[in-house]
Image 1 (cartoon, rainbow, N blue to C red):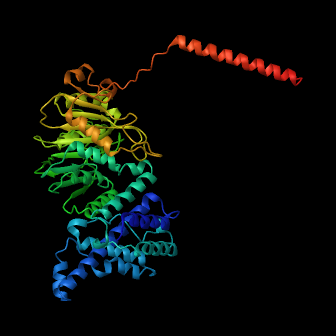
Image 2 (tube, rainbow, N blue to C red; image 1 turned 60 degrees about the horizontal axis):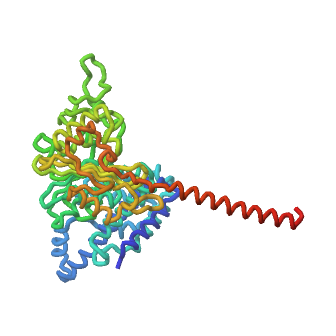
Image 3 (tube, rainbow, N blue to C red; image 1 turned 60 degrees about the vertical axis):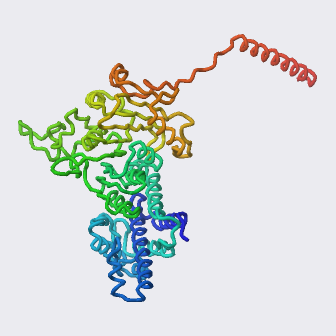
Length: 511
């Protein structure tokens, strides 16, 4: 049997084939693409063998059965063909052609998924000799790996190994990596707070490599839910599409483009509505409005627009206020709220703490959100949970058509509410369960949770800073001054005794 550890070892070995030659933020794309091709090839090989046995070698019936499988791959696109040609001087081009043919044969699911990957790149691989050596090593790394479903320990082992690789590079690539990967446990918490249900539409407008979407989808045991997402970075979008495919979510609709200036969730000339929205947008994105300004018409004085205004958005998402150009947090929040189903929409979003108290236009937006009774919970997370940044974050939970007008505040940042790691702190399952239970029960818990009425929030001038609502101050024990005086006196007496003995010893030695 092939275990997850076996796959991870091969992936790590493949990394060694690239180290020192290509930047780590790039070679993940090549390794994950090869893992994808190897998996498709091995699945096809096993299926074909099964049908050949079932139909006793009748090639016509075998081909008919293979045509009904969830994907198609021809002989010259298989890993075995590429491995057999690993010493060919044109191996880079042969891999590119194989990827193109895989896209062509599965255009409904994998269109353009390999467009940002070039195995013949001189920029990445150097001269022909170096390139061919690296690619030969890569093919040899994967050759011994058996990814036939009958040999895998579990159905999700490939998808899980895929996420392991993405997480490894998020850690390795620093802040840039953190932009497209949300740690698994944080994703699990966000998904649980949004509470996906059967027949829901689930949406992530900044979906990265798709981990958060998959966690939300997994919350629906029957799998009867529709998955939607959008990602601006083309390479990360491709990772997401492959990730969905490897996890068996074939009907996921993942769009590519800038969610703010070019949202793809359009239905009947309006923003598509979703029952569940989950997201971890890039923290305080600078120049989030550039997509609007670059395409804006000149103003009344025939000058180029230099400042974002609400009228530049055809979807009317910023009527409550236009977030500052240097901080796009509320731009994403407003987009998500406008994409939320008016009857039963639930939404959980990871954001920096600044959204809770910053002033100017953000203060105006925050007031509108609270006055319209959309905010359901504010949850403070421990510091150092995310790749590439040590700053603490929070999760804001929103809901349409809420039955109450209070807000649950939870401070889960204190010691005992997470596991300390060497490089990164970790939310344990018990920590997640504690947060979710407190959120659902909506009862005050000393130094952990407070349910604030809207009037209390208004009294605080709509400031949502968690310490205003959850007091985690630990009183120090009273000091007994008389006891301290006695201890000092005892120490001084003991010191005098020691000094007297030392003086006597020194006199005896004639010092």
